[in-house]
Image (tube, rainbow, N blue to C red):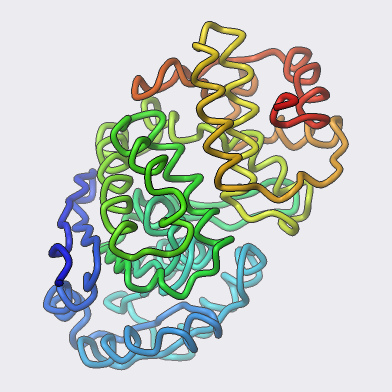
Length: 369
């Protein structure tokens, strides 16, 4: 039986609007739109060797839809998000005849999307980018919203810019090749937005957790569409991340610090966010969050599974927390949920309290459950 037709969403922002096509067969459904945006242009597709090997079809579609295609391979994962890699891509694009009317296509996971978006936003003062995300995490979060960045050793995503894509196509059929660990990593980002904005989506993840982890494309399609729609609603109200959009940092303050402390090796991004959300709800419980919310989140995270948290020094983590890119003169602001579906408060928390809670958290992230 044929599945539902892809969902079509739109993100309005100061630069115009970005169509977002989500679901099984989204690439085929968006072929005409891709052709309108890419035809006759020099195309630079940023991808990885693994994605290129697993999914040759979309690159063939780009050649059919567009003009001269140059495939630019980068390494897998967060290691690609460096200023040196960005500089290498800029040089390769110049050598390949890149112009102001060229197009960049991000074809890969969240790291590829972040890197390619940043490269496009800065090349010749900005060329358009199209996002074709291939991982669950990228489809529900990283490819949507215009945030692009590379990392420095001191802090993740510390050099970047806002550069909204011309088009985002989230074809959930591409998720069928993902290992369980990558699906799990993406589901933590789904849980993040669901707990803050969509109780129905949270219930769907709870009901279908095992099928989602198994890569059931039919069940993944509405989850991706629901998470994308919830994120679009938040971003549209604060496209430059000056206020309301800050709630999307739930779980990321400690999550990014964990990633940086581990040298971006040992935990996937979503896994670090999973630990970050568990820590944030501890802080939120001290400020009135119903303990049942903490128990519910902990139970779902345990069902999905998390790799053991590597040994981490609290003082080293605190140093990375202090460098959080959202920190201001008032210090580090933590995003703390107030109730399921009710959003969150952006709350300054003193370093002494964070340090005290962090020590017990590192010993027992699930609170002894």
